[in-house]
Every structure is written in structure tokens, then in C-alpha cells.
Length: 187
Image 1 (cartoon, rainbow, N blue to C red):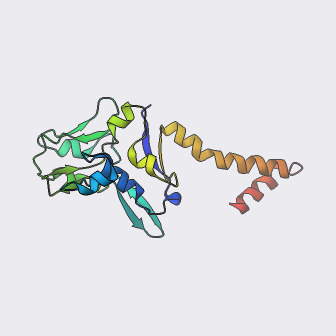
Image 2 (image 1 turned 180 degrees about the vertical axis):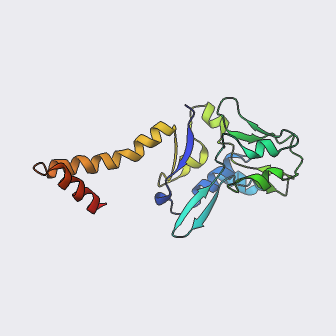
Image 3 (image 1 turned 60 degrees about the vertical axis):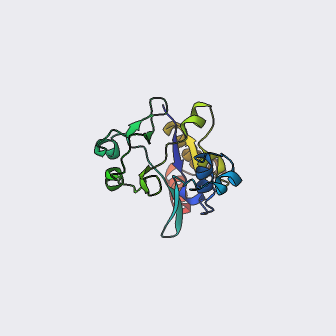
């Protein structure tokens, strides 16, 4: 199964390293200093947002039935044949912003400089070369994870399995009911 970028919200500290890495990756220079000198500057395709007590990187979810693809009158919104991600064919985009209006996650933005849609493309050149997307590689807290859904599910189950194993080892004489109650009260 294709890999996706997952967010572990409780790890995000809003450092915006993902935004910087994204802008640099999509710049002509491919270096931080070079990207800063470009005019116009490259813009990130991921934005760190705040929601209540949490921060999270808001990015394209590459929907299976992507409304942006269906809404695009020129076919500029397409699905990449290798990475299965949704991307913008910049030569076909006419800047009508239909994709911006229909995106349920607000992940497609209007680039006023170039008059085209701007969104996460999941760094296809990096992925095809066996590397992680730039935002994932740059995240110092590993709040962004590039994995298959199965790998991510296993990763999320691991701490729970460790807690259960520790509780079983520590309470060997307890009945199943008492063990269940002790686990529920500690959660």
C-alpha cells in the first residue's frame, strides 16, 4: 500500500520547520539561503495551524475521491501515477480557484503571484528516490510520519501493548476482571 504523511498532533510544537523545509524543497535553489534570495519567494504547501490547545501542520490529505480533481475545469488537478498523491499541473491551471473553494480541509490555497493553485504534492521526486517528503524529514519531534496505514496503526498500538504487558507482569495473581479495572482506571 502507498505511504502517506500522518500527523501525531500531540508531538507538534509549532516550530514551523515543516513550512520552511517545504518552501525550500519547492524553491529553484533548493537551499535555505538561496530560497530566501529568490523573488518571488517560494511558498510552503503546508501551514502550521492552532486548534484549541494543539498545533498541527495543515496539509493536503490527498483524498481518494478528491473534490479538487472533480471541480477543476481544465484537468490541472491530477493524481500522480506512482505516489498516488494529488498534484497541480501548473501549465494547465488557470487560477479559477474552484479547487480552493471545494477543498474540505482548506489545504489548497491560491498563489496570487503565479495565479495558480498551491497545495502539497507529497514531494514526488523525493519519494521516488526513496526519501521522505521534506516536511517529514525536517520535523524535529517526529510529529509528521511517512508510513503506510498499516505501519502507522502498528506504531500507535505499540505503547498500548507495552502498558498491557507491564500491567500483566506486575499483577500476575489478579483475575481478568481486576486487571481490566486497574487498566481502565490508569487510562
